[in-house]
Amino acid sequence: MFKVIGQLDNFTPSSQNTSHCNEDRLARTALCNKLIKSEKAKVIAYYVVDKNHPNGYEVHEIYNNGVVTIYNLNSGKKVTELIARENQILRYGFKPSKCMLKKSRQHENKGFNN
Image (tube, rainbow, N blue to C red; front, side):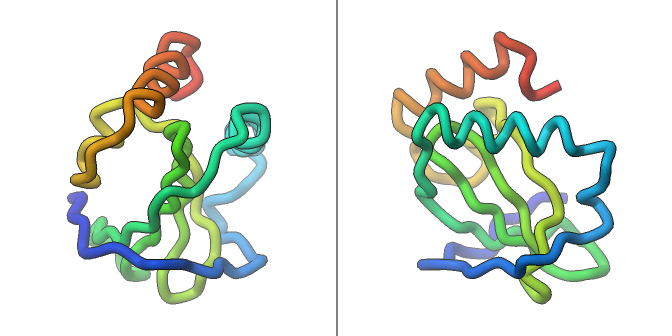
């Protein structure tokens, strides 16, 4: 299930992470941080998403290069991050820029979102 509930004007995450942010995901976290920094990515939107999780809604922080950081709405803790493919970007319901789609395709061609 993936249902966009709405959009937030801003969001302040907690400094803590959920148990999903573990050693298995350190390489992906490092890659996402590297892409955000090297591509000078900026946050373009915060979406509240219902994934039917027992801990409640998520906040998806969308960057203009296709990186998405996911937080729990109630606790503010970081859950994970991902490097979105084009279809994953489109499901939020906004029209991405040509540059965003280009970066997303480049990331996919490099295998960053596997």
